[in-house]
Structure formats: C-alpha cells, structure tokens
Amino acid sequence: MANITFQCTEELIERYCDISGDRNPVHLSEEKAAKAGLPAKIAHGMLSMAIGATILSPYIPQDGFITDYRVKFFAPLFVNDTLMIECSIVNETCSGKQYRIVGINEREERIFKGTIELSTALT
Amino acid sequence: MQLYLKGMKRMIDQRWVGKRTERSFFTISREEIRAYCAVIGEKNPIYLHVETAHLNGYEDVLIPPTYPSLFWQKVTIPWIEQDALLLQREQSFSYQKALIANKQYGCEIVLRKIRNHGAKQYVVHDLFVTNAETTVLTSTITFVVL
Image 1 (cartoon, rainbow over the protein chains, first blue to last red):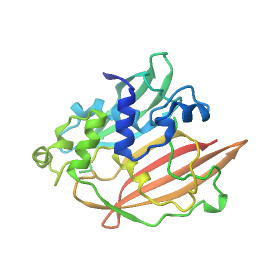
Image 2: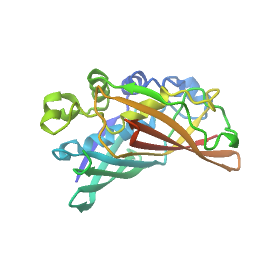
Image 3: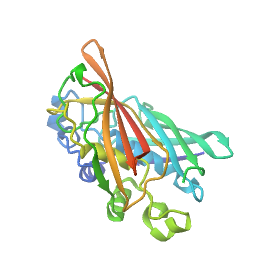
Image 4: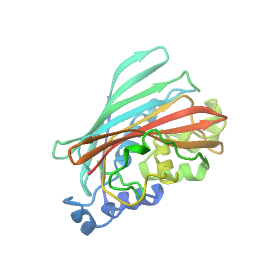
C-alpha cells in the first residue's frame, strides 16, 4: 500500500540522540560500538519505529489518530544502512483500520515488523 | 535492536518485579513536538499546526504516537544503576485517548516481568501515561539484558 525508504546517516542518528536524550556511545562512537561487539554504530530502534509511523500520516482520518502501534525488533540498523519500511492494510472495521508494517534493510534482513491501528472512535 | 536506558544495571534483581516508579509529570510543548517531527520526517499538520488540530476536533496539536518513548529517559527508575547493553525486542503504544501539546500528563513505569534464560535476562516494563487519574496510554517495552 505504501512504503518509505531512508538512509540511516550519522547526522540522522545524532539528531535523534539530541531529541531523545539517549546519547549512549554505541550510537555515536565506532570504538564504543566495537567494544560492545557491534560491527558499526547503530541507530535507536525507536528511530526506525517513529519513521515507520509517518507512512500512515496521509491516511489519518479526521477526528482520528494512531491508537495502537506495536513492533518486534529482529536486528539492529547500522549507520549508513538503508531501511525500506512497507505498510499494508490487513483489516478494516467501522471504527478503524489495521495495517501490517515491516522494515527491511538493503541486505534483505528484516529489522522489525508489527502492526498499526488507526481509529476514529477514541478522540 | 539496541536501546540504552540511562544507568541500567546489567542484571535486575527479581525483587523489583511489580515495583512502580514515582509518578513524574510532563507537559510537551508544540515546539518540542515540532523538533521531534523534524527529525523523523513527520509532516502531518495535525502534529504541527494548531489550526488543523482544532479543525480535527482536538484542543491542541497531537503528540506523535512514538513520542512517549522519550519519557523513558526522564523517569527515575530505582532499579537502574549503571549503563549496560540492552537489546530492544518489542515495543508497543496502546492509546485510550490522543495525547496533545500543552496538557499535563502523569507518567510512571512498572517492572512487570523478568525471565532469566541462560546468561540473558528478558525484562518487560509498562509505562503508564495518565491524565486526571485516567490512563490514556500504556506503552510496553521488552528488552534483553546481555
């Protein structure tokens, strides 16, 4: 139904560090990431999840909002990785719609998957 | 996916299960929401323009659905003592009501469950956001302590 692709640049990670207050060095230092057993600096999981929600922005109904959003993470997203997030509708009722969401990197590795629900009933 | 909460002790003692943090209170400004939206690429005016929010029946701009993850960094959690590597496994946000700018919300975190599996520890926390003593958001995070 809809998708979004973005590159996880150093700048993006640093901006998310600033906005979230989470400045753990594995997001910012290659050396610290290596000491943690990681091949490169990594992005915050919540950065990918937050960007994923923007896919449905054009579909938010009047008087409605995202009422439920849940994902399971399978692998880290490394600096300079590209993430493609896809979203497709799986269920529709009189009060809302449920979508499936999945994030996959350029190596075809699944980074996360989950569901998002839009509702008009709980404002 | 790695998530690092400030000061997390490497392993959490089971005695903390069921414990609840003190309630903290937050009011999120339109400017804070705008800055967050700029980072994640959110352009929906319902988060950015109060006029659009009003037209959609809200008192103020909406707080984006994943924004409350930032509350974790602001709440003091007594069972957190030092930095450690955490693998974020699951995250959810379940809203009973939309959150909006310039409204005061209470926030508390409960350690719901710990499961030890070999050298790893699976930990589940619930974050409750309240307004006027009513829960408006429950956010659950599951992570692995390595």
